[in-house]
Image (cartoon, rainbow, N blue to C red; front, side, top):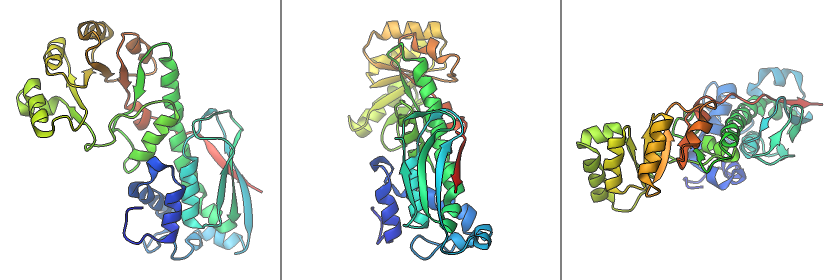
Length: 309
C-alpha cells in the first residue's frame, strides 16, 4: 500500500481487497462507513483498539468473549458483488472476524440463498454488520442492474459501459460492481482518458480546434473521445480521427445514419437517457457501445441480511 507506515490492520485489509480496489480511496470508504456508526469523536483508527464498545447495544447485551457465527443471505434474486470489500471491512474492525464466501462475485443468486458466512467476536461482528450489508447490498444492486442491461443487448455486438456518475467516494467499488455484472468501464477519472464534451468544444472554438489542442498537448498519450450532437458534428469529428465518437441524445434513426456514415472507421458510443426499455433499440442501430449513468446512480440496493445463531 502506497502510504507512509500503514498500520498492520490497514495493510491486512488492503491485502484482502481485489487488486483493482487496492487504493487509499477504498480504504477511506471502509473507514468512513465504520465511523458513521461507531466513531462519534473521530478518534479511532484501525489497530488502535476495538471500536465495538461504541456499539452501546451490543456492549450491554453480549459478554466480551461471546463468539457469533452468521450467514449472509440474499433476500431477493440478483447478482452478487462486494464480498471481498466486506471481508476487508470486517478485518478492519477485528482481524479475528472471518468472512468466507459461498459464491463468487458476479454470481446470480436466488432469494433465500446464502452467499457467505461470517464468524468471530460477537460484539465486533455486530458492530460491522450494517456497514458490510450497506456496501455489499449497494454493489450487488449495481451488478444486478448492469446484468439486466447486458442481457437486454446480448443479441447485438454492443457493450454496456458505466460513467462517472458514481456514489461520492465509491468510484472504484462502483466500477468494480459494473464489471461483476458483465459491463465494461468507461474512464475511471479525469486523468486516464480525453473526453472532449460540449463545454470543451465551446471553449476551444469548435470540434476541430479542440481536438487539435488535445493532440498538441498530449499526442497519442491518451485515448481520445469526442462528443457530437448532430450528424454535421459527426462529419467534423470523423475528419479529426478520434478513437471514439460519443453520439449524445440521438434518436434511433439518427444513430442508424451515424453508423452508416462512419462505416466502421471509428468506434461509436451512444449515450443520453438510455433505459432498460430503450437500450435494445439503441443497440440494434449498430453502435459499438452504450454508456448508461443509471448503472451506478440509480441502482436499487439488493436486499441482504446477516442472521446469527
